[in-house]
Length: 159
Image 1 (spheres, rainbow, N blue to C red):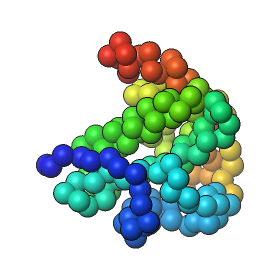
Image 2 (cartoon, rainbow, N blue to C red):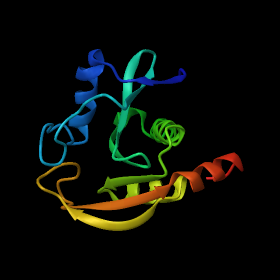
Image 3 (tube, one colour):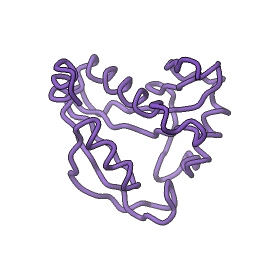
């Protein structure tokens, strides 16, 4: 496989981004679950120039942010693309002074992945407004990570 390139999402990536979002049932934007998609802090993963992954985040305050959307083409899962996207956005937020990062997700395997690889802790749950993500799960699990603590584990070469 060719190298994975992570770069800022651009308007011309929109069709590919929505193709990926549709695969994950996260394409209903605007909606109560996802009111807007601004591309301000969004990134794509490309392989051979093709968009195969997408992620973003929203700044909530000087020290707090929330991840918004992450999806990897099912054909490319297991290749570390999601890990690279998550690490990229976490480093970006840390560099901007973010201390507390919140993530909402619905899939049990994704919850376990965030905890194992990035040090997230469960802090609550939110009822979904309508079908978004897995249609069989009606609740978002809210996770948080301390980016200072995460960065220290990165410096020590641990996750």
